Image (cartoon, rainbow, N blue to C red):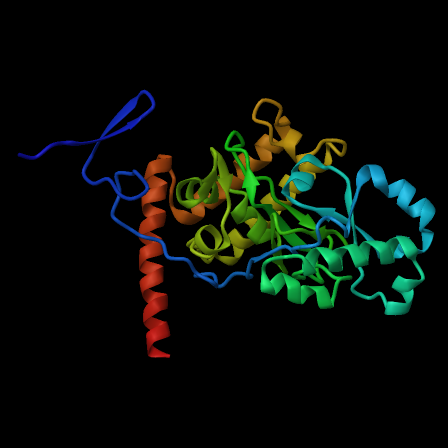
Length: 316
């Protein structure tokens, strides 16, 4: 006896020919974890991990007093962001002692005190790799800070938002490990990533923290099937991406959390996103498709691209 397959999504019931691993009426396509992007786009990396017991971090309410007591440390203090600080515009700082000499550190007692605390914290760890980091206690445990402007992507973001807030950051802003960073990315990549097409892909294949999006480099970004635009399309998408940034700039006191609150999103920003979405949808030839249909096509594109890439790898 055969039974009809049903997908029940809230109040909607969908008769399905096939229910895949993503609970979609779509082919069985399985994404693998990739260490490099499937397409020719800039690599994505995690931000730097302090692994310091909090001793290299200077909270906003500590900053003024720390500078007052240790003024020579100011040149070694940088703005520091995890995902929460990035989205909510919160102030947080860190001691970034990459270029500091031993003599300079010893000349700043409060800094030296924190560095010694980092060393004790790491030596007390049960993990051998952390204990080894005690040999360089003035530095973050893992340093991956870009030397150029970069796109920052929060690892975790509320599912209430239509778009995951992303933005261009200066290399002087230290990105922590709750941010992904894309060094050397430009406006075209920003426009693609901030599109409804990329969000449809993300919301389908990403992990979840409770119900929030948990972005992934190895699954979401590295497997996303990018298309090559024509030169006119490329420049149109760049202009649309810049328009998104320009619309944000009209509200300088607003945080990304406020700008992308679905109930408060400014009309100029909403219009800029809608224009960008139309351009990306046209690039993919997704005009008139539902989100489910777009996701199905993206999965099929991924399957075709991954087979091509894997075959090339086997021949090389």
